[in-house]
Image 1 (cartoon, one colour):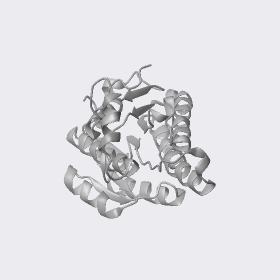
Image 2 (cartoon, helix red, strand yellow; image 1 turned 120 degrees about the horizontal axis):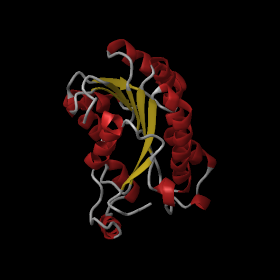
Image 3 (tube, one colour; image 1 turned 90 degrees about the vertical axis):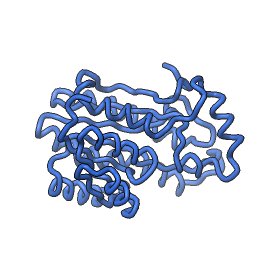
Length: 249
């Protein structure tokens, strides 16, 4: 990808799954990655694995002070952040009428407010420099809904609306903001959601996907790398589904 060599990226939830794949792909493109995660051990393991000067930073995206401290550390160790990837996410499947406010708050805090915290902290620095890329990871659940994921789908839909608005507000400052929406993807989170003995559920998911398989973390990472690169310099405010054709729009 053009224009990524030597850039600095801040990737949330990068200790495992899709976040780790994003960190690996960006490092392969010559990006120095701040691997941020709530779990310091997984962040460290990922940073060690991706190399290219990657650093591990423990960050709780639900806590604005933690995000601020993490950004300050990255600025000090690596330099100004060129690429922000908001990947951190979490869910627990349940029918909406069986959920409570405590669960709503946790899902919204991780999936939606976490993105607000990082954008509010990092994007002003991009505006000051007149350049930057923001790639927010939403979900196809936020585009079409998903049974058992009402609050999660709402938070992910919020990411799409917020990103379009932010893209309009910062475009004249040379900043691109885009969204990637994974479909069902083979990650630890999916397996946690499906529960043990989930083979039949996984097979039913595959049957609904025109390309006949679950997504792989690397599929999402490729889309993120493209949107972070100069190859996507004239693309902003867009939402890209990476779902094997499960959703088409």
